[in-house]
Image 1 (cartoon, rainbow, N blue to C red):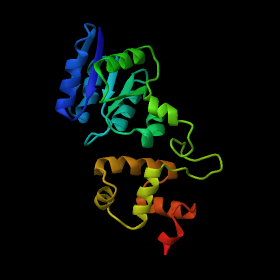
Image 2: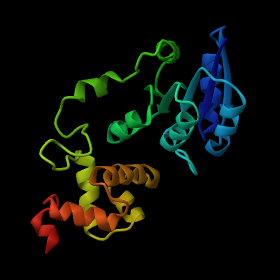
Image 3: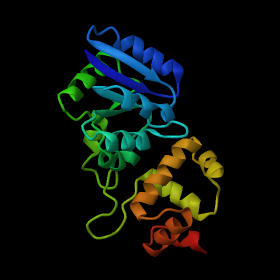
Image 4: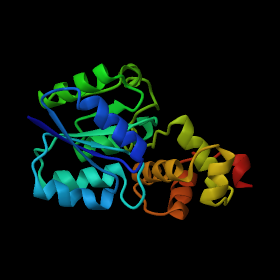
Length: 216
């Protein structure tokens, strides 16, 4: 029997996914809609595969994965999301994530992804694989010449940060949720090696990543 734990704060998502996966006779599904309770389940029972939503209140999928893998490095953790994971790719891989499954996947795709993960195969979206070698799309925290490489989305966020806008204002300007913006900010902090937006702006200015006209 393959024991699978799905952690997602959207009840309709986890119930729908559970219904799809339980069509496999050897899959046993446990669902949890609170990321704060997930570690209790993980410590009480062995799960062959863990599916974590990326964006959850209180404890996001990345932090939950870190906690789970710190508890047991042999766990197989998949991020189950409907959002673009490119801005967080390096952070997730460094955390020990085994792969990614889209919430738009068909039942067959979900099952195939989970079975591949059980064989210790990495699960990556084709769209992501095609962009792995494109400069600036997915990068390490710094490039070989010591300069930070940003995605187009991160450049927009950095520009709005330099204008002194609040998180809510930036999210509204860029038409994204505050939660998504917070994840992008976390990725920026990681790339710059800082912990605050003030330090991020200062580092960006020193590297010439904010246009001169924005500094006037």
